[in-house]
Length: 462
Image 1 (cartoon, rainbow, N blue to C red):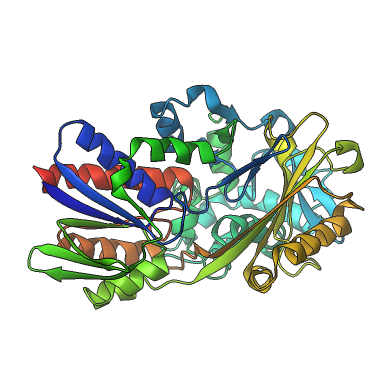
Image 2 (image 1 turned 90 degrees about the vertical axis):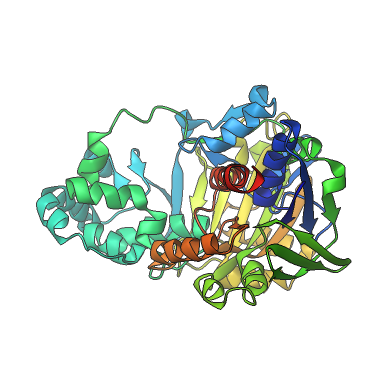
């Protein structure tokens, strides 16, 4: 009988427990304890269903180019629940000079695939449009100048397109995903496909044009009843005696070949530990075991606040066609972004309804962390009204706070993670899971959990 502790019941920890339950169903003799300090599993994935609205408290879906979330959904019998984004109407806006200006068609992040779409754009100045056109002409120069070492996203984007493009699109796009400062974020960690394009083509525009037509699938996917269904299905497969809610892990140590896990209810011994706690908590737990590993786990993290509003009458909440808008740093708004959920995905609202989700990050999120739900909702509604116009009283309001939930992958992140992986391999029976290491999206977390359990099966159990 092999004993495994899973520390943390967010998506990564729950996915690991699910994979372990499959091993046990296949005949492996396993004893597992999944420890979650809060009273629920799923971490930041939570769906509120009220009044016909489907409101996500955390992520609203996943990127389809990463297959692991879809594979898990299908495996759990949720194939009929899969719902793709309405890409035929996909437009994204940027708050610029107090107005919402649309990002030109054919943009992949901050890279255009069709320069003709820039001609009538109100978003970019003529200087920025010239920078896009020049980037294609500078292909050989850019390829020759590609650095051999990591650099920040800001340096990378500025080399290709200049400061205006970085400020208007690059910074708000990446802040929404990683919660990070583009002058600190590692381009190799967060924009790896574009780094590869630079090495091959020099010009990012040329790189995208070379693969144009390859990406026909919708960009995003979710579940009809909300991502909470994915969590519920995983929970249903995990033996209930494995789950320990409201139990905080306060220490992790080694005693010979065993791992000793101390919790608020006592101490247990295990053959392996899957550490899926938030990275700042995992770091504190690992420090007594390996100080250098803990040092490598040191990274900044930002908080996020999500506020969802469900309105009965879409006609009274006018929004432009598309998926939502971004707010560049330095704008006169506390918002980071807003998603028009009923336009991004079908089946989010009752008939004639409208669903908006406001996002706050950085200092604004830290400020709102100290506010009550009513005050947070009021601030969010005021910020949205300043941009969209007067808003009626919502039928449903949902406020969620996620402290230190977005680790920042700083310059040199991949090198640090490579060294960390080496050290962890030397600590027989330890796996690090979660969004602080190898990706922040649902597919990344699910992929890592599956890979960890496969490694455990191959090298520990037999």
